[in-house]
Image (cartoon, rainbow, N blue to C red):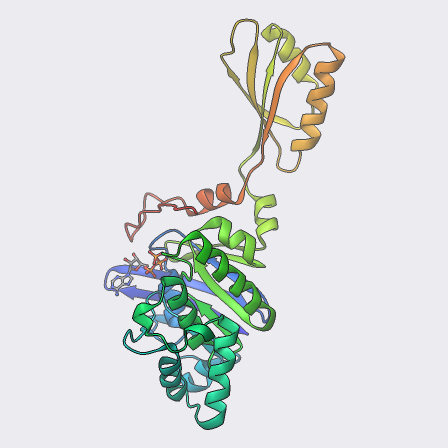
Length: 326
Ligand SMILES: Nc1ncnc2c1ncn2[C@@H]1O[C@H](COP(=O)(O)OP(=O)(O)OP(=O)(O)O)[C@@H](O)[C@H]1O
């Protein structure tokens, strides 16, 4: 559906997107994840024909966005980070204006406006000025205009930013709903959001692709080890002896325990956390060593994100690499 090939965008000395290649298939929800300044908006602006590229190609449904912009743009609806809403207009007036700009008119325009207002739940607000709407409803109006013209792909740049928790839930539900009938690509720097909504995660940092996978597979294949923390009531040498026969342990950090107690943070192999915790339990039980505490910390998507997007010392953009979470 969308092919991005060797895409590069430079703003003077700043390389916002660097040799990015992605292939997006129809009918899935893609989360575009990356820290601030990673290049998400730049990529989305190029993909939707709003910005030129320095190098590379983008094809939408086989049409080149730079050479056949009209055909390519017809297949894509876009909600930019700051949608150009006309505050003095009502949603209905605004949608009519956008629809006409997309080449719709007459009955078709009227029907489509009704349809997108229903899809985004803004019918009740049709006659109010946009300036009087909450941020959540304004965002819905922005999504409604993206849906006009029946595009196959919907691209949403940070659609939940600045919304309150209830509005965030509503917009996420709307994205899920749209995912049933459209290919949806939305950017975010909120991990939990991307994890719960998307079928695929595209992760970028410093303008480069660092991961492209399902949320589940990304979590399973990351490099961060799992951790098991135990507290046992026994001398340290007995605890060491008990752990020496446990398979799957890659490393142990010994922590200072209270009197008579030993605390250790045990690292295990990637997929072996339960195997290791079961073996630890029985090793201590066999030796009748009281195990007072055992807690598991599984590697999470957050770990993957931090691991893959960590700012490199040679970061040419000077990007901050900060992570915000919802
Ligand atoms: N018009 C511009 N002129 C110069 N530099 C720019 C311009 N637009 C973006 N940049 C730079 O390009 C890089 C990528 O920016 P971009 O807005 O695409 O990132 P982003 O991932 O969308 O970030 P955010 O989540 O903060 O919106 C950043 O270093 C940014 O400062």
